[in-house]
Length: 231
Image (tube, rainbow, N blue to C red; front, side, top):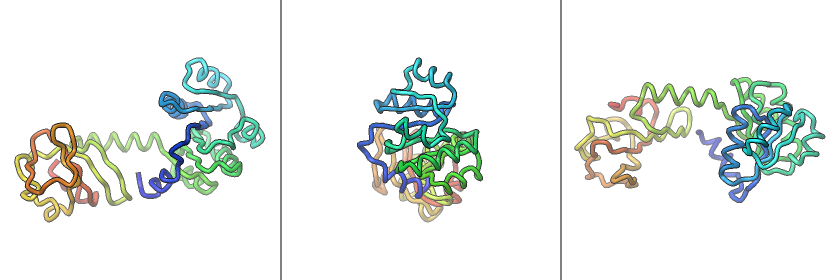
């Protein structure tokens, strides 16, 4: 996640209890089901009547309608323009995805999240007004590749293309040493934000704290420097 994404999420209303999801493919079903299970009201739509019936039968949404989202009148009649947040989950049909996103933004929806299938698709979605664009397949593939090559890194939060916050298992080389002794800032240009202890994180840990086997540390810095860690 980068800073532009953070700016988008800061604008979301915390009291928003309703979401509309357009497209009931794998991604749309996953979003709808998760939101519904969390207790939110979800209106889902799809041009395929079978998918709509399945969503209702499986009770993964509050309401579901069959409609053509490339038709503004259909979206308006369904009440889509009244939602604060709409997820356009049509990733594999680029033309329909772009037209739908344009329709929703022109209908006055303040927060529109759209699924992209390529970089060109992402640029087009942003051009027609999408507030936030996601690449589910790319992000999952990227996360898997990082896990396979750097298994000690448990979580990564991208601040921008060059800097991240990472949660990692304390390297063997650091075990038993204090934060001062490992000289993380001098040797790697990184800063320690937190260290786990008894299942809980100690924020801004004391420099004299010793790093234990199996514990976890959170560091911030340049990706190039993070990659130099002995992990």
